Image 1 (cartoon, rainbow, N blue to C red):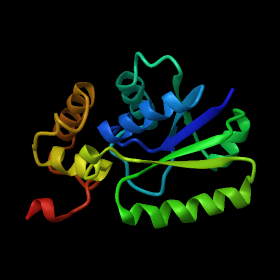
Image 2 (image 1 turned 120 degrees about the vertical axis):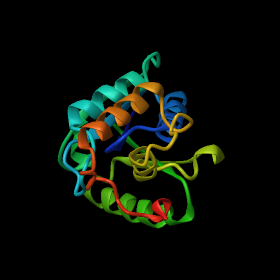
Image 3 (image 1 turned 90 degrees about the horizontal axis):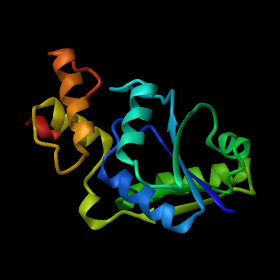
Length: 174
């Protein structure tokens, strides 16, 4: 049995993530969508909220499970006996980052393989930060995230009001 881990912050999960998780589920016996708890960036949702949104976005897929984790991804993989880390590549700039991370992970745990899946062309522009920014500006993200995620985004931004420091300033505000 080959077990794969698809790690990320998933803040929030979007259709690009869901596409990669579903495709990985066709390739591996079990896929653990691993929600990282303490990344080095500000998050919109708590780990528990992100796990809930991921679980509800991926329900109905029998060989996918969702779990939270902390620490090194390769340590988590070893702890659950996973042999593969799955990553998604959207654009060329992702490749350099993912390549360096794969080499570092291979140095730490040579027995764990890293597999990169190329995103579906419809999702190349999607990122958590893009979704967060559009939602923070009351934009329509219904084509980017499941309904439950859109509702959670709307609720969170209503709670935050004008204090939206978790959303980076980019050209969408111009």
